[in-house]
Image 1 (cartoon, rainbow, N blue to C red):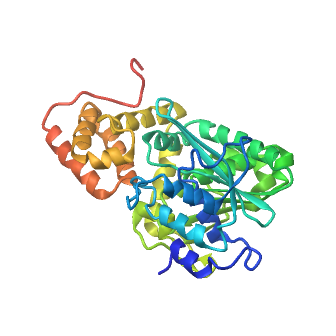
Image 2: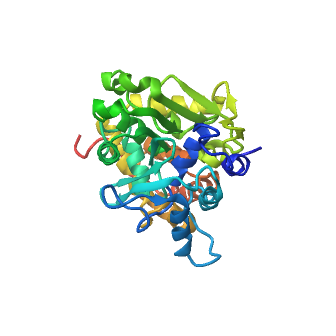
Image 3: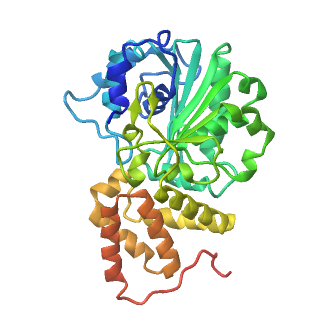
Length: 387
């Protein structure tokens, strides 16, 4: 079965004049923002656009020759190869890059990155980075279910306004993968009406949804017919919170959470291989996640998320790669952090970890937990002390 890299081999020789922009092009540009273009592509208002092939040359030139680029645990390692193929293709090589932003604050759990691509057909693609390797980024993902607006969403709206000012006559496509899809929709909904009129499409590639009240707002209804939501057949991330009804399901050659990897999505010609609905497991994940959101107060959700990421960072890890590389040490530290919690809370945290990580890491944690359960435990709950 074929994926994004095969698509670049098959159709990379076709310019956008020969074959118009499509859903697969969208995902490729959504993945492109995961490349670290710092020092290569200017920030908003700080310089002229850089040709994609020139940016690619500069990116690879600063790396040790022959060294494998580790993109992290959940960021596809195929992205550098994708960039090479894009730079060699008629379809992408002459696209221009600008307005690169990459912000991370571990203490505040804030992560935001974006890139603007001049596609060459009179439009721009504003690509928002999804959840990367950082625990700060994942914590902010979970905060989507807790608070009315997370910092990255506010930054996304400001970014769209800045790009719209810098390129005043261009049509806009907004898109992203994972949290980036959520940011694309959010920024399209809450940007000024004058900017909304310039939006041709908004792409959410397995991005988390929104609370019910967002979907009913006039701002959302003004752009609803231009939002395209795509989820894999056993989606976990893309089924968090409520979704636009008009989403379509694509086939994947992976299982479970690993279907979140856009390089596992199956491509045929200029489109994805589509299915009628998500799988039974995908529907189950959807129900479990929505039940978690709906049956907890906002305060309880925030306490749960804080508890989860206190556990995940107990070993001193700041990224998923840290947890993977030091899995034995991390598992022990995480179990120790959970030892004073009550069984229901501990089980809820373990379920969240199961959704986030591969099963072998969860097994290691459960082995440690069995040892720790031989000791008496204090009671812990989602309520604040003294309540």
